[in-house]
Image (cartoon, rainbow, N blue to C red; front, side, top):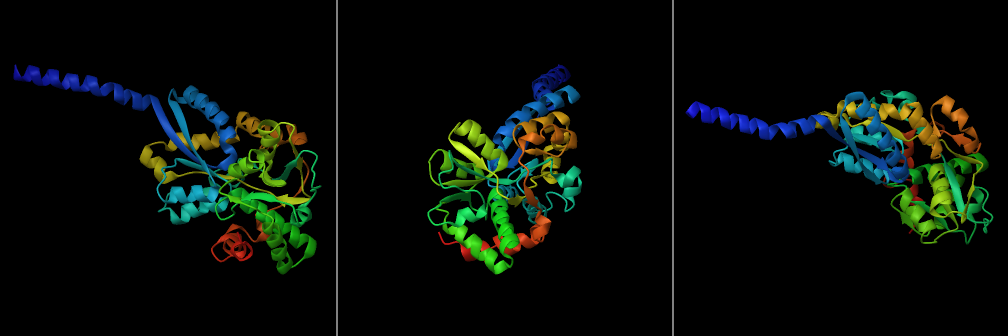
Length: 335
C-alpha cells in the first residue's frame, strides 16, 4: 500500500509539473534594449521574426522592448538590465557594455555580423515647419540669432551625438581648425532651448509641443514625423554634409546564456539582414545594408555627402574628446 501511494504521488507530481515544462519548451522570451526611435521598426520586425522562428523551430517567441537614449540604455544594461540583445544608435555604446559590463559580451562583438554589426545605416537631417519660415538650408542657418534648434542631450542620446559631430564636421570642412569648429557648435547650442533625453522626446517637443524652428532628427524619424505625426505640417531639409550613422546590434551573450536564449537571440539579429527585413527597414526610411534592396529603394533617400566616424578619429577618441565629462560639450553648453 505504501508503495502504491508513493507511486501515485509521483505520478500526480509529474502530471502537475508537465504542462509548465511543455510551456517552457514551446515558448521563449527575448528582451531587446534599443535606442529611442526604433519603436515602429521593431513592432513590425518582431512579428516578422516570430513567424520565422515558429516556422523554423515550432517555438513561439515574444520579444519585449526597452527604448530610450542610446547611452542611457547602454548604462542600464551595464547596471543589470537583462537584455538578450542590444540594438543601439552607435558602436561606442555597445563597446561600453563590452568594456564595463562584467564581460556581458566579447570585445570583438562587431565582427560577429556583417557590416560591422550594422544591419542598416542612417543620417541626420533637419525637420522644419511647413514652408520653412526661417529659411533653414544648411548648418550655417542654425547659428543665426532667433533660430531655436531642438536636439537631445549628447551625453545620453545617440542621435544627439551624431548631430553634434555632423555640425562639427561641417565647421571643420568649411572654416578649418578646431577652434572655429568649437565656436560654431557653441553658437548652435546657444540656440537650443531644451535638451531632451532622447530622439523621440525631442520629436515630441518639436511636433506636439510646438517648440523650436528646426529639429535635428534621424532621417527615418523626420519622415515618420512628416508623414504620420504631423501630416502636411513639416518639411524635410537635407544639409550639404552629415554623418553616416551606423546603429549597431549585438547579442548580450552572458545574459542570453543565463536565459538559455542564445540561438533565438543570434537568429533575431541575423534575420535583420534577410531580404524581408531589409525591405521593411527601407520602407521605414532606414538605409538598408543589402545592396539589392538599397538599389530598389534608392529614390527614397536624398544624396548627401556623409562623413564617417573614422574621419573624426573613431568613437573612442571622439567620445573622450567631446562627450565625456569635461569634454567639448561640457565646455560649450550653458543651460
